[in-house]
Length: 352
Image (cartoon, helix red, strand yellow):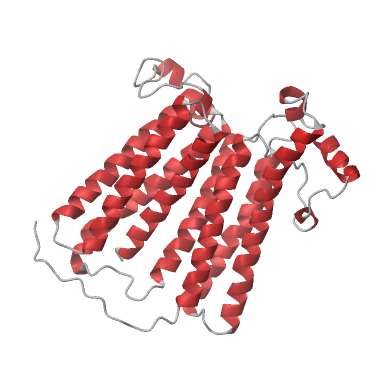
């Protein structure tokens, strides 16, 4: 049904939350960087190089030859070293240690970047009411992320040569939810942040919500793909071993059958492919639907931008697969996942 065009008018109002909003966008940017570095840490097999969890003293890397030798000896005690890298020398160890240390350092810096301004704004009366509790909840999610990160790492120190894929997926998904929560809150603090859609927005909110949930699900599946190194198998597209849908015997070869959803590289990669198509279809249908209505042009532009970002993300995913996971393209693939999530979150928030 077509509706009469409503002019997009922007009412100039005071912006008392500008400083808080800028701070939250800086936090979101920091989480974005941490997710990308975390992806590189996984791709370079660096995640188990630091075998201890020291939230405070671990902020400093080894500073002399004796400390480096001690850290390397601890790494030599875990199965990953013996089974995958028995010929690793100290120089190679330092390179993987740098990725993991950088990832953990970013986590600590994000904690400080969130906590200090939060307390300052709270003391100045800039954060009140429901916003206070929402931000406290986001801070709690960040603290939980630290525990989940160590829970993930600890799974690969004894009986495995890598972290448990489901724990990696939870770690990535929790970071993504925190990132989306920060962006949602920052977007909602802008003056007149809602599009002037009126009652018509009700038609599009469920679509935008479903799209946001699909994007988060796809990111979680991407964590499973990374955890299982599933990107190193079935390096063809759009077929998998000559078929669009692999045989059921391959998709459900593990027992119990539920284990296939997290531990079977065939089903995990197939899931990731299919949900990618679902995200693209949902984005296209939403853009076409919202484009038929004579509503706010900004909403239409965001919907089209979301389609473009999803298309780029799919192209990067296919390139990552066909080229057998080269680090720069795989990192770009992870970065674009966060960009898609950011756009989906902003779009949903602005629909009110």
